[in-house]
Image (tube, rainbow, N blue to C red):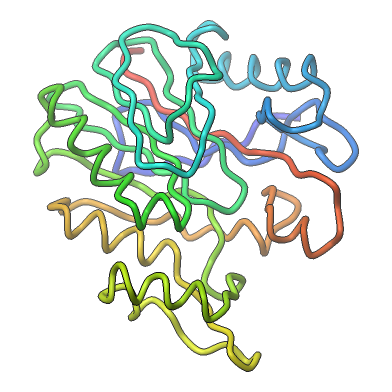
Length: 254
C-alpha cells in the first residue's frame, strides 16, 4: 500500500509530510506505518517502516533523525544524524538532506520552515510540552540559526481534537495556575467535573503569541479516525496493551 503523506501549502516549497498509519509493514495492534522504536512492535518491522518514510522523503534511512521524546521543552540543534536515544522534544537544522522527525499518537506534531533562511524545525508538543514552552523554544533555536519570525511558517499536524480530549479538574487547575489565558481553550464536558481541552487551539495560540503570522492546524483528529491514525487515548479506552506512533518529517534540499 502506498504511504499517505499529508502536506500543507504553508510549508512549501520545503519537502515535508505528516504521515498517517497507511502503507506500513506492521501488523496486529500496530497495523500500518508504526515508526515508534519505543513501542513493543518488532524492531525490524519498525525499521522497515522508517526506511519507507526515508525513501518517500528522498533520503537515506540514516538521515531520518528522531529523538527520545520526554514531553520536555528541550530542543536540539543538529548538523548531522544523531543517536535516536538522545532525549529532546524538538529538532532544528540548517543542514540539507537531514529529515527531522517527530513521533505522535495524539500529541501535536509541529513542523516549522523558514525557506528564505534555509532553516527548519520539528517539535513534539503534547499538553505538557506546550505548557512548558517547547514551541517557543523551537522558534528561538531556529532564530539562532538565522531564521526570522516573520518568515517562519508552522503547521500542526494530526492530533487529538477538543471533542475527544476530556480532562479532569486537576488538569484544568494546572493550566489555571501556570497559564490563565489558556482557560479559553476549555469547555465543559457532558460528564460532571470534566472538561474538553482544545490542544491544537492552544498550540496555535502559543505560536501566534510568539510572533508567528503564519500558523495553522491540518484539522485531522487522531482519535476519531482509527483507519488513518494511531491514538494513545483511543487505544487506552479500548484496553489495548500498546499503540503505534506516526511520524512527521521535514527536510531541506531536493
